[in-house]
Image (cartoon, rainbow, N blue to C red; front, side):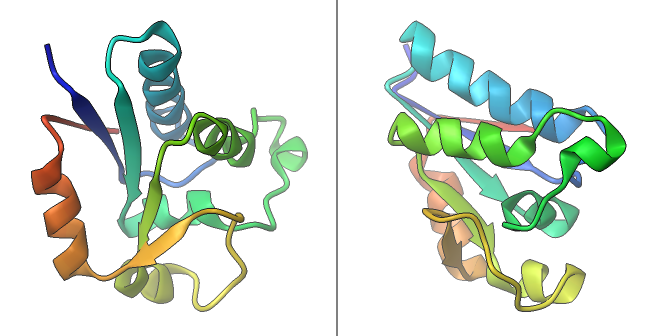
Length: 119
């Protein structure tokens, strides 16, 4: 059995189902006990999921900010790649608890997990 899973989120929070599905899949794995560690790494347009000022009600979509908060409540680590964040949206406030890392550290995070799945 795998001891850890990493959800690699590459899609923006709204307009696509992948980001929400990935974050909820990670939460489901934790809650069900299928893996003791389920973290998320936000890259490319996926970094938008970490932005604090989200308004999902404006597009009538479920909140990815809430999905991230739920994962953090279960002690998952949420990482966002600094270079991608700055390129996509700039230096903006992020959801509390999200850890900003560089690509070198991101590669280490990927290597540290038994399973990696991309959404």
